[in-house]
Amino acid sequence: MMIRGSPHIRCEETRGLMETPLSDDDIILAHDPLDVVEHVLQAENLQFDRTEEGDLAFTLSGDWKDFELWFAWRPEADCLQLCLSVDLEVKPEQRPAAFELAATINQRVWLGHFEIWDDGEVVFRHAMTLTSGERPSLAQAAAMIDVAMEAADRFYPAFDFLTQGGKTPSQAIEACMFDTVGAAKAGVFPMSITPILLLGAGRMGGALIEGWSRSGAFAASDLIIRDPHLSEAARAVGGLGARLNPELEDLARAKTVLLAVKPQIWRETAIEVGDHLAPDAILISVAAGVRSADISAAFGGRKTARVMPTTAAAIGQGVASLYAEDAGARARARALFEPVGHVVDLDGEDLLHAATGVSGSAPAYFYAFVEALEAAGVSVGLSQDAARDLARATMIGAAALLAQSGEAPADLRRQVTSPNGTTEAALKILMGESGLQPLLRDAVIAATRRSVELGS
Image (tube, rainbow, N blue to C red; front, side):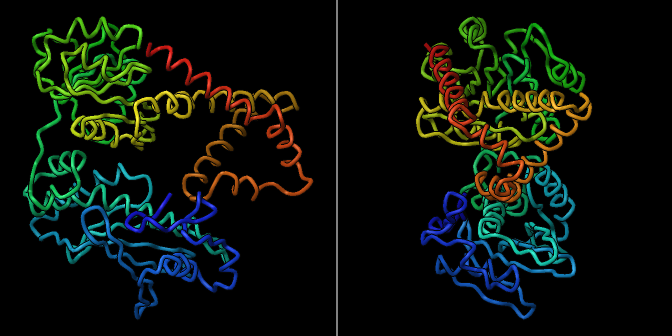
């Protein structure tokens, strides 16, 4: 995690947020949460001001503009608030469309939200609630800035497309997902990425269909689906306008092709449909282990990107590892997967094997852990229902805290481990010589090795 636009800020407790190591011990005398923020900014020599209202204001450079940010502490609500604004005004006649655009974008951001203020200013707002007397850690303060800068860099161009380029909300969000650097100011609207052809709509393809429907990223009429065994998700969008198993000649309409069949049958699929695709169609493959050069060759040399996603895309919480040599193919893949989760760009295609072991297969590791925890609860006397409810709710809560706090897993673990307590007794087993670390290392190695085998 790092403050974007200020690439040197690091913190030791979160893989380091400050170039000069700084720990929370350095701010023990801080009187209010804004003092913590001051320490984060001072460590990077960033200029900031205290406003008449006591807020802390500063500027950071984003990918395409400078953003004005200010922190405010609201003691009556125990709330630390961060707002981010840019020099962009929504005219009165544009506000209905801007409100529609903001609502669409807010479905896609994990934390915080965009607002249109009465004066037409577009603002991103993010807040953290603290218990009485508590102050945020350095990592939490820096993470709030990260969240705001990431949202601004990703979605402010959409408002520029709408206000300056005359685009509709749907056009603006599509343009934003394709290219956010410079194009908005120029009023450039990229070539449409739809229709999208899904070759396979099983577990992963179905998850993407559900995620796109939930986020509003693509209309059902934007989808063409080919699968001999249509899933419930595919049938649902079919009833809303998606084309299901059309004739091969109709596939030439597709601008983007998502290869979502099992790795064992991808060549059969290429032979069946390859000659019927448009010459400029871009392929996005989620077939584990199959190299992009092989896919491109089998599909007539078309541009190709590879993605290793997770099925949590169905609820907008997916993770996708992405590799593409071609910048256009990379942008196209991002446009498909950013509406349904987080995208991580990889520097080399071979790293997708490791990403499969760490991310693509990892949801199953988590489910197996919860399954084992439930069984362990029953073994010490809990009913199956009680063990199930306790194990699942605890894991969900812990994952949410990890996501929102910005703190390192090791720090969160230490915070809930009392010396000579029950948690420490359990961790001596889990973190012993034959515990989680060697088990997970071996599991990730096995998954990585199998990914390589599938590719060969």
